[in-house]
Amino acid sequence: MPFNADRWLRWTFHPGAWFWPAIVLGAVIRLYLVVFTEGTRDIAVWQQHAAGVRDLGLIGYYHSNVFMDHPPFISVVMSLLLRLAEATGIPFRVLLRMPFVLFDGGTTLLLASLLRHKPWRFVATAIYWLNPLSIIFSAYHGNTDSAVPFFILLCVWLLSKGKILAAGAVIGMSFWIKLPGLLVMPALVFFVPGWRKRLIFLLVTGMAALPAYLPALILDAGTVWQHVFGYRGQMLQTSAGIQIWGLRALITSFAPAFSSWPAGGIGAAVFVVQHDWLFAVLSLLLLAWLRRSCRSVQEVCITIAASYAIIYGFSDYWSFQYFAWSVPFWFFLRPWFFVSATILAGGYIYSLYWYLCGNPWLYGYWDFMGRPHWPQIVIDFRNLALLFFFASAWVFLISAVREQIVDAFRPPMAEPASSPGGPRSR
Image 1 (cartoon, rainbow, N blue to C red):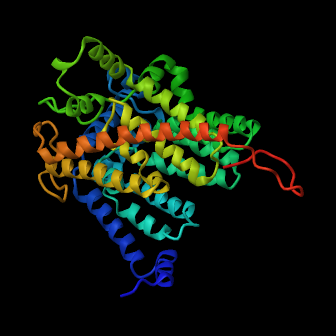
Image 2: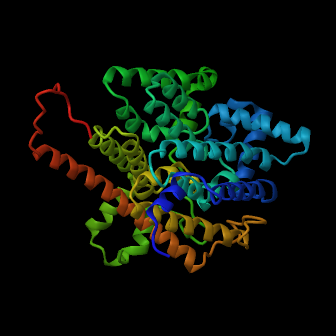
Image 3: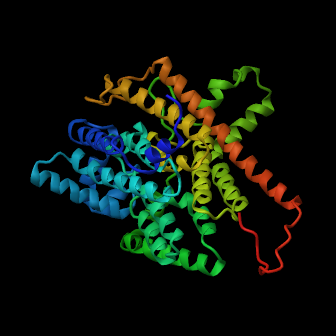
């Protein structure tokens, strides 16, 4: 059948017979995972945290458990969910995951809205809703990370409408649940036009975030700062020494054996790995500064996706569900990134979870401790995903630097005589 451009545009611009079944399918899969699967160990950890907050109080539990690293608000909410589970008989794992399925639904709607001028927006919306990563992290894994992209996208949407106060309030409220939105605050600040409005945005963000932290800070500011704001992720590995992610895994997988390295090279590698979080944060700050004049919705979403790619590529302190922060922003990048990231990251997470559960339906016990030796296909997916995000981080940084150099040497464009002068925007 010959290609029909008009038919293709109608098929992509409007949700047809294919779109709503795709949405229903994604919802059914999520409902199955929420109700019938056990999820990862994060659910048991959250249940332990919830019980600790219930029994010892928030500050008391911060003192009793050095691994308690969640913000005060969501910790108290989880303790209330545990009480509700005990009162109603509804499993805690169901009550924990259902709100984040709803957050993911909101993310899907916001993605469709922000892509409204793209001819393929309904295709992208359906692909996101059926993406194994978005499904697994919202409906199966059992943590709060799926809230992060919802609040960031909502902030971007509000800023695109000129609603500075509402946008600041939204991103501030996101810190009640999880803090990774802080990593893209530079990109959001530069999306706001003018320093006066930027300061207002930052002020409102702080004012919105503070009420959820203030009672705990008054009671014990040092403990809250250490447990919540001092958290840098985890360096996870199996009992057999297989690392789930990070520069160490990248080096051991692709670099020659350490025995062949010069002493200086080993010292440099150790220094980089020990300070990887600092390098990652400095790199994303540099990226945001270099792209500060890129202020369209698509450009700011590209900066956000690139910022998280830098964290994934440069950091050793990482957990499975961190991919959830950036998946919807991949749709604003070129196809080479979106397709590769989806295949490699999705292949890694799904193949690993399949192995740890023992079946493709993720039904049963997620046995990370009891399955320390991973199949080669899982390790291959991990290695390729690692290499991809490490290389992508450098591509984004180098491209931003190159763009600045090109702009510096580009001759100024002559302004039409009838139009007033002003700064050129990209």
